[in-house]
Amino acid sequence: MEGKPHIADIIQLRIDNIRFVLVPVWLEWMRRRNGSIIEKQVAAIGLKDVSKDIHIIHGLSAFILGEGSRWRTKKYNTQRKHVNNIIQFLNYLIQNKKRLKITKLSDLTIQIGTDFLSDLSFKRQGVQTEDGIVEKEISVNKKTVLSIGSTLTYFYVWLHNNKLLPMVDGELLQESKRKNHHNGEYYYESIFDPIYPSEKVRKLEHCFPIKYLPLLLEVAILKTNPIVLGLYLQLFGGLRVSEVVNIKRTQFARTVNKGDFLLNIESRNMRTDLKGNSGGGYAKKQRRQLIIQIKDWGDTLYRQHLDLYKESNNLSDYRPKGALFVNSQGKALSEPSYRYYFNKLKQEFCDHLFKHGDADEKLVANHLRIIDWNTHIGRGTFTNMITEQTDNIAEVAFIRGDSNLMSSLPYLAKTTRARDRVEKNISAAHEDYVPSLINKQTIQRRT
Image (tube, rainbow, N blue to C red; front, side):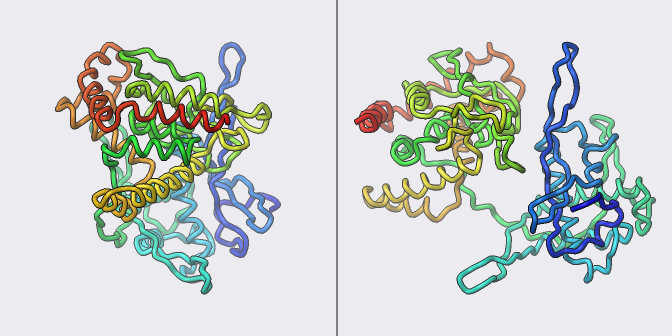
């Protein structure tokens, strides 16, 4: 692709091999007083020739990164969300330009944005099967459509301010401007009125049966050992998968009561060689997170993990280094890879419980096969265990890392009652379950 298309003419591009994409970019953001440079990862809008697998940074990136942009100084995760929202719209325009009778951005109307959002509510895509390509409905909830509509409203305002939206009445945009009385900042309500998808009851399971946690850890040790420590951190610390994969080997320290771990959870992409969000590693909330020590399971799992999994010495292609969780090549484990192991664990656990369990346990296995559950069940299970042991909402928020109470170490003493009861319940499920199994597994690996 040669040259840079003018932002007003993007719809004139041929659609055969061209599409808009998100492009992560590392920038030299600022310089410290000592001369060192602070780098920042930002999300740009790119135009890609898929036939040649090359791309350019498009001028529309100024919507996210330009001076005065609402999201210029925001974290990468926030920028990424809004870029993804906009590139959906831009690709929709290119793919449907004949039907929409649009040749350039200045042809845009509010109705086109409304139609795009309505189409999202009933989105379908082609899926390759043995019988050819068939259409399959994609589940898009109302919250997602509202989020994209909000970004699109700001995009229309930005285009109007750059004199690229003559078909839209500027007074209408001003009428949607509101003031937040809590912080005094201005924002725009959506200018679109699409048909939203019907509200569906989400069937995602949020809590794993406590009784079977020791067995889940056992199966993980035997079948998906590279993530068993991560599973422990999720179940007994409420960490999200994106937070697990960015932990460094040097972060563990027993600094609080009864050997509990206290981890600094920070945004740190351990796989900057991967494009998009494949590397994961972005913390929804940076905080100090308590990881409950159940008997000596956490210690044992951590020591075993350090012995078995080490980062490769040949890591010149990405930064930072020192990942705790690594793949078979010794590179930091990506979020998709972690999810792959977790999905394998789900299958192995259900198969084991169905094959070796009694009649009631076979029912549990079938239930877990039918319902939808993913890595976030660890955080839900952790929350459930805590809330069952205390009626103090501040205590729950503190242990989950949901508020700035995490910065106050003296408050840790107030968590003792809840964490002791959690440990008692888990210990009752199986006495000295995990450590003995790990020792057995380690002996098998060495023989």
